[in-house]
Length: 618
Image 1 (cartoon, rainbow, N blue to C red):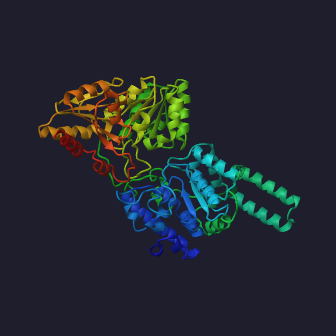
Image 2: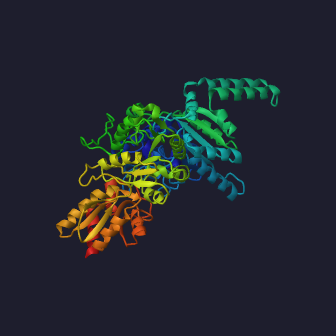
Image 3: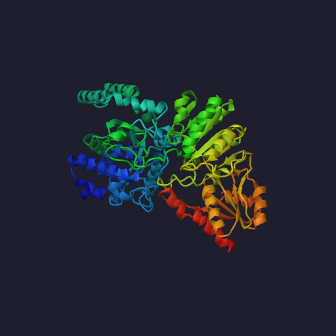
């Protein structure tokens, strides 16, 4: 196999261009084989194989810099940059990341995982290069973005600044009609028109050849021909859009044809100033199940290669928090016509696909634009609607200013359904939802809740819709336990005493109630008894109950699936004035790995919680 001989971009350059399509197919097969076992972002990476080969064939990395937006498409890049042998450990604890990672390879300029950042990062590299080299372009900088990136305003901020500065920067726009779910918005619609209009480039080339072979240089006719060409770009391609931003535009190109990609890239990389190369690819290319269902194979668990069927079977009747949220919102929306749902390009991931199918007129997918989603929801809310924004915890970080300024400051009753809070698992450092308690609990007017199980999530969603103030409900990426204890009606800021005892008080928030309950049961078997409190609210906090229970037992513990610095345990200390022995996550970036492995690592399982309490009691 050719791939056996290629471990680096230098090895790649030893092959002739006729061999590269074969290599691309071998890379594609390796990606499918590994991801079928580890899970991962399959469809995006399959679509970008030829583009990755072409970039590394034409550039000299790591001297030249490639910045991948998000990094969903970076698997071929990892294989070609000294990580082929480790690729089998993809997204596993102790293995390589599913995204570009600066600690893995000098070929990765940044650790990335959130959308629309690549142009700004690349422009920073470009300006630093020119400054440090005295204005010389000592290496090339390339940002690789997708059409989904263009649904985020940050990408346009970078493009606007790059066009203004006129530095030598290359942007490769890879369009495939999909980010995670199908792209939305006017820009996406405009870009995808070109897929059905290949006539433009044929006409353009014919015009160029005709005019330049028959008209003297500098002629007025040549200038008119150029004007005519610009008019055609405006009609047939998005070229005029980017050229008005200050970029030279080339494309659209077949992103799977190396005989077109490589010569074009070699020529374009010699052009001065900002350049945008537009390629068109097929998400899931080369694997029929992914081609036919790119949304499902955007991020997939292990699967059967022959059939594409998932290997992990759901337990009958066991629902995840995401599913329970989606089902309950549909139920509530039948009774309340003012409920509307908002997502930032994640209808399936957040469970809003059922709401979308049931109430399309009340469903809004704003693209990968969390800041806009929150502002937009505030506008909906101001006119009397009840918007529910379903978003992953890690992505809500992007809208921090808007939560404060447009929602909390206005005291608007927007509901934030914060999925994937706590440890997410295999997606690693850029996706762990461990900071939300700390960055939300100090915001005025905002209520912050976390359910112990699926039934309590349903209660909290209904309760939130009855409040006339902003509410955030955080819940994990996991199955939702059936109610075991408690279930008292919700009262604002009131916790729930699940067990009583004399030796200690354990205050647990959300997902930590279940292991907390198991820990108390373990300690009971050893002769210890304690209070177990289901906090329900991280803000406002039931300080009175926590203080009374803590004073009776003399020892008070807290446990949370979030960073300890500024978190739930800190809130108890601040509001009760008592010393709290806090269990949770350290203030560090949590690596990739299965959720249960990481919970064990950081002492957030029943045995570790019981052991910690017992060690203090003794």
